[in-house]
Every structure is written in structure tokens, then in C-alpha cells.
Image (cartoon, rainbow, N blue to C red):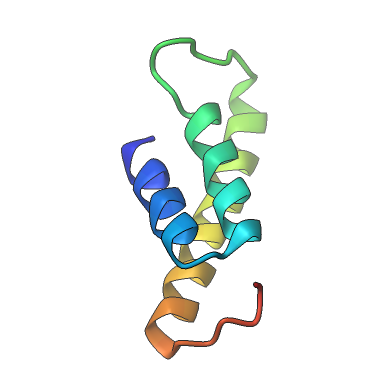
Length: 69
């Protein structure tokens, strides 16, 4: 949750609105204060999707391609 919040903050600073909302949603989904109870199978799918979001975001930052502004 904390890393998603940090990436959302960086996205806000760089004016990447799509990434901001993606990572705000991820931070809310993984927050420890009010856990969201889903089935193990659904969490597995969500974990893979979130990993893809983090990977794509890091790749874009590394290559400085801001195609998703």
C-alpha cells in the first residue's frame, strides 16, 4: 500500500493523471486499515494485474516514455 501511495504521489507531481488514479486505487485496495475480503483466487488475479501495473510504470519511468499522460 505504501509503495502504491508513493508512486501515486510521484504520478501527481509529474502530472500523469491516469497513473495517479491507478495507484490510488491500488493503495485503497491494499490498505491495512479496512481490509477488503475477497476469495483467494480473485486476490491471485489482482496480484498479477497489480504486478503488471507496477512493472509497466517502472519500465516507462526508466525509458522516459510518457505515452500515458
